[in-house]
Length: 233
Length: 240
Image (cartoon, rainbow over all chains, first blue to last red; front, side, top):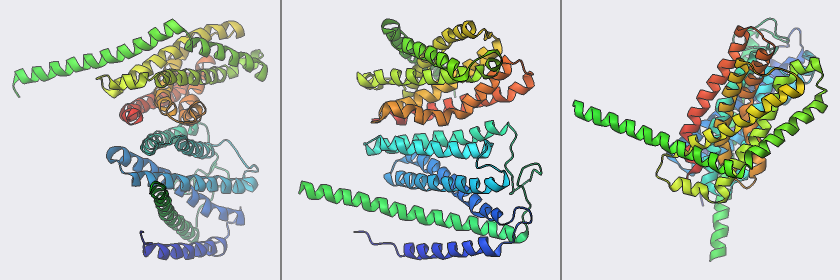
C-alpha cells in the first residue's frame, strides 16, 4: 500500500497556520474602511473565494483538454476534485457577497452581471456533477466530463460579456475603478497587503484540498479493487 | 511539387469534401424521411409550443401594452423548451434502436454525423418556428414578420441546435437522460438566449440598429465558437 507522502502533512499544517494568520490580518490588522466600516472586511475573503472558484474551473477545463488529447485516469481525478472545490468556493463567494451587499446595496441580491455570471457558473458545474453521476462507465464518464467542462468554461466569459452590456453596479476594486459603482473604495497600502495575503492563503487552501481529495480518491479506488479481488478469490 | 501532384491533391481534397458533404446530406435526409413518415417529433414539438404560448397568455396577462414588451421573451422561452423535446427525441431514436452504432460503423468522418444530426435538428426547429410565428401573429396581433427578427431567429436556432445536438448525444447515454438534457443545456445557452431575446426585442420595438448590433454580434460569436468546439469534441462523445 502506498505510503502517505511526507510533504502532505507539512502542507496541511502550513495551510492551517497561514489561514489563522490570514484571519488575524483580515479581521484585526487591516485598517477599517472609512465609509463602510467593518463589513468591508468581507471583501478579502470574498474575492479570494471567487478567485479559487475561477481557478478551479480553469484547471478542470485544462485537465479535461489534456485527458481528451492523451487519456489517463489521473487527469480525470484532478478534474473531479477541482470541480468539487470550485463549487464550494464559488458558493462561499456568492454568500459572502450577499452578506456585504445587504448593508451596502440595501439588498441581499441584485441582477448584476457578476452576480448572475457567478450563479450560472455554479449551476454549470452542478450540472457537470449530475452528468457524471448519471454515467457508470469510467472512461465515458471521464470523456463526457471533459467535454462538458470545456463547453461550460467557454460559455462563462460569453455570459459575462452579454450581461455586461447592461449597466453594472458591482464595484471594481482591482484595476480601474468606476466611481459610480455603489460601494467602491480605493485600497490603501495595508489593505492591498491584506488582500494579496488572503489571495495567497486561499490559493494554498485550494492546492491542499486538491491534493487531499486526490489521495482520498486513490484510496477509494484501492478499496474498490481490494473488494473485487476478495470477492473473486 | 509538380503541377500534376498538386492537381491530384486538389482533386482528392475536392473529392473528399464532396463525399463529406454527401454523407452529411444522407444523414439529414434519413432524419427528414423518418420524420416525414412517422410525424412524431414535429407534431409533439408543435403542440407543446402552442401549449406554452397559451399558458403564457394566462400567466402574464398578455394585454396590448405588456405584449409589446414581453413577446420576444415568450417566443424564445417557447422555442427553447420545445427544442429540448426535439433534441431528446432525435438522439433517443438513434440510441434506442441501435441506429447510432450503425451510423458509427459507417465509413464516414464522425463530425459528418454531428453535422448531419445538427442540420436535421435545425430543420425541425425552423419548421416549428415557421408555424409558431404566424400563429403568434394571429393570436396576439403582433407582426412578427420582420427580416431582422427572422435573422435573429435563424442565428439563435443555429447556435441552439449546435450545442443542443452535442449535449443531447451525451445526455442520451446517461442513466438520467430525459432529466439531464435541459440541466446541461440551459446554463450553457444563457448568453445565446439572452442576446436573442434582446435582439428580437430591439427589432420588434424598432430600436436603432446600432443598439441591436452588439447582441447580434454576440450571437454570431457564440455560433462560430460552439460549432467549432462541437466539431472538435464530438468524436469523444460517440466513441465506444
